Structures are given as C-alpha cells and as structure tokens.
Amino acid sequence: MLNDYGIQHFHLGTRPDPRRPHLIEGTKELLFAIVKDRDFYAIGIYDHDDWTKRALLDVVHATWPELTEPYTLKDSPHMKVLGLRHNYTDDEVKKLRGSGVNALQQRPDGKVQIGMGGGVASDSTSLAVRRETDVLIVQVEELQKTVVEALSQHVTAGHLPADSSVRVVWDADTIYAVPNPAVFKVNITGRLKIPPL
Image (cartoon, rainbow, N blue to C red):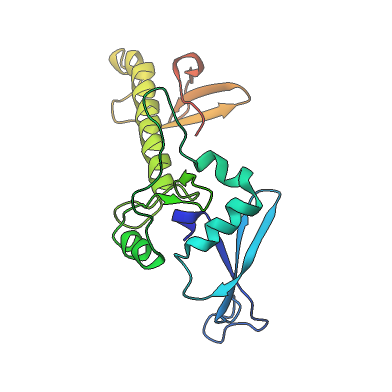
C-alpha cells in the first residue's frame, strides 16, 4: 500500500507484541495515514484487509486535493484526458498490485490519477526506490570513471600501482580522489557531475 498509494498504516494496540516486543500488538483495525516530513494526514480507521480500498484515495483527494494534484493526469497539446473506460474495483487493484501492475484510478470528480507512492515494480517492490537505485548506479559508475581518468596519468607514470585502492573524500566543497596509501590527492571537483537524487 505504501509503494502504490503512499499510505502508511499504524496498529492501534497498546501492548507490545508477544512475539516481537519491539512492535505494538497487531489489531484488526488500523489507522491509515499519509506521513510527510512535517505533517500527518489521518485518513481514518479501517479494517486490516483494506490495503487496496480505492475509497482511501477518494478521501485523500476530497479532503486534501493538494496531495493528489501532482499525481493527476493532465491534458497536454497532444493528449486529452477523458477518463477511464474501466475503473478497477478494490479486488482488481489487489490482483494487479500482487502481479506488480500499477492501476490508474478515477476519482469521483472524474480526475484520473496514478498512485501517490510512486508505483509498484514487477517484483512488487517500490518502483520509486527502483528508479532512485538506477540513478544512483549510474552516478557511481560516473564517479568510478572520473576517478580512473583522474589517476590514470599517475598509474602510467609509475607513481601508483594499477590495482591501488582509492577513496573519494569530500572536504568542504572540494572532492578528492585519494589513493591508499595517501601519498597524494587529486582534485576531481570540476570533473565530477553528479546531480542530486
């Protein structure tokens, strides 16, 4: 539910779970909420089986439309959003999610939206985390390429064995490639282009 709808769940028990004392004992009813850095949006108390209930997003959309607005499909010069021919039922959403398929949904006011959680990957993990991981892998590969290029002249000159281990060190606003042992360091700040996640 978190990966698809962006909604957290909270157990309403008051005692520690006997099997997992670091957790609260599970309850049949759960508080579903959206948690942001500075805000907590309590949607309501629902049954433990309501993980795919479309009404959850309907409540969020009706109560806090600013939360769903970024996930609303909008008309463009090349496309007009007319609506969905079929709005999936709760059970259909459950089956699709279980298969790693994301379902568009249409709210009662006609707006069509994607899930606020960033989506579910085909292995049922977070699609948003998968995308961030892919970006991070590309950034690490770029960093490795930059370090190898920066130190290649030292390897060619015989100042550094080709199999040396190297650290990347951030010192204030300057980034260095530092071999081990640290006999010198190479400033790679201007060569390194890693955008923020």
